[in-house]
Image (tube, rainbow over all chains, first blue to last red; front, top):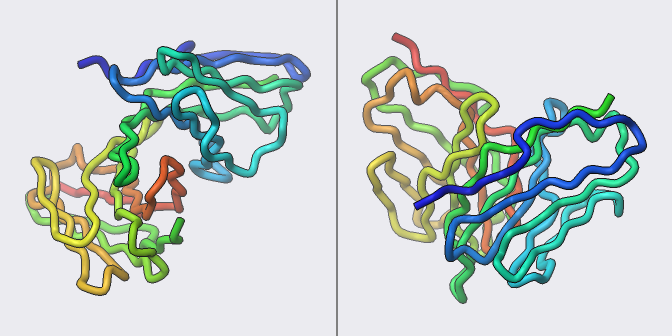
Amino acid sequence: KAGVTQTPRYLIKTRGQQVTLSCSPISGHRSVSWYQQTPGQGLQFLFEYFSETQRNKGNFPGRFSGRQFSNSRSEMNVSTLELGDSALYLCASSLRTAAGNTEAFFGQGTRLTVV
Amino acid sequence: DAKTTQPPSMDCAEGRAANLPCNHSTISGNEYVYWYRQIHSQGPQYIIHGLKNNETNEMASLIITEDRKSSTLILPHATLRDTAVYYCLASFTGKLIFGQGTTLQVKP
């Protein structure tokens, strides 16, 4: 069974640009969540999508947005990049049941560097 | 989601059991306790989760107190490859709130 796939693995962008990151969840998983990890703030929740709808949102500015497609693949977009957006962006997929979420499986992440 | 508290670091001798504690005194009735670990620069790896009962899988055991206010992750025979940051979380939804975790150093 293939794991969570994130592309690209590494990315360098310039301040002011925008970036789109992609995540393909494990087959059958309909919940996809995004996280940002920086040395200073640790792992922070960005948002969760389930069946193409945003179900949960963290405390990030509107420059951070996402979407989910009918095949459960998800994209995350950051507009007007700032130096502080340099981070490891992680995607996680999980099953969502009436009893709550099951365990989440993380991808290897996309390392974004803003210069 | 309930806040969790973990010691910042722990050491363990290779081959011995590693017991990692976690406090989640404000956990609500429907929140599961999850444990993940992260080896440097990789995505977090799921270890185990539970609601009320103790759980065991091929990686670890999870002991949850009867009042559910704390738990302990047990790695029965720690190896050098178990050196990582271990995160304890309480969650019902897909929103996982990570704290600073416990850095476990397994020493030869």
